[in-house]
Amino acid sequence: MAAERVHRTVHETEVAAPAGVVYGLIADPEQWPLYFPPNVHVERLEFDGVNERLRMWATANGQVKSWSSRRVLDAAARRIEFRQEVPAAPLSAMAGTWIVEPLGAERSRLTLLHDFSVEGDRAEDVEWVERATDTNSRAELANLAKLGEGWGRLDELVMSFEDRVDVDAPPELVYAFLERAEQWPGLLPHVSRLELTEDLPGVQVMAMDTLTADGSAHTTESVRVCFPAAGRIVYKQTRTPALMSAHTGVWTVTGGAYGSTVVSRHSVVLRAEAVTGVLGPSADLAAARRYVREALGRNSTATMTYAKQHAESALAR
Image (tube, rainbow, N blue to C red; front, side, top):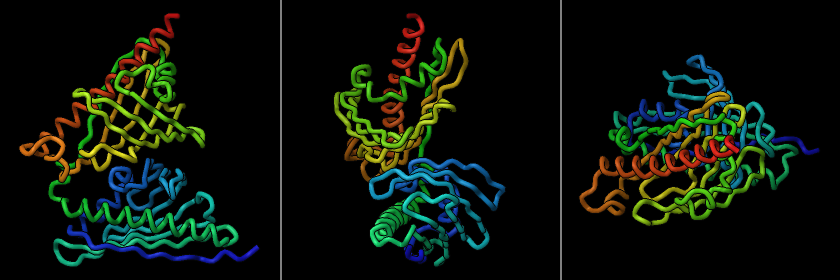
């Protein structure tokens, strides 16, 4: 078997934001699905302020990959080192470093280094990893640069909210309705088409057409990760409506034998440059926030209401 060589890549960009702001964006991994286009979901498993352990799901060359990583954060040096514990195939090792350097009070350089090896150093596997690393790194740095340019109004662009419905049925029935989304077109009036594939257990890739209150149709594509034991389904839209540059969410079902509560939580980054084109020349970010809150809340509440009816009627039979 050929020896495994270490391959190295370097990606960097300049960001029109202070170094502390840029470091803050990369130091908060649970927000990465909103900030990094390839990231679907991140769970922080351990953190003591310096040492961190993460479980991550992300797309790579059109595939969904999952792995766990350890990170060491150095806030003073604005440097974060990471290493995958059990790399996703075809990797045998992956490590790297984020480095933020100030270029003045309002500008920074962000560098992302990767060192990796693949099993047997097969040329086709090396090419696959290099392509995925290059594509994802460029997307991540470009989006961070864009977010950094508008860092002064990031609080206006990012929004989170939730809705909840109580159900007179055990949580397992509600969760089953939400998990088996391929059945929704026949059950939910606002869903006209839905295609779902599940090549890996619990990891679903979904394409869906939905109708809004004004009758217009929107096509979205999502990756969902299902956690049946926790009664939770997280998702990231990989194709969003024009008004949003990022949209993530989570369905959570809790309760017992005599009743349950289902909660839908949305997190969104608005696309500021699309506001007037979608909502009219006089619209502003406040109007966009209201529109997105109402539209997403309406659809998710409708889905939860039908889940409630489905679960309660199944219990009555």
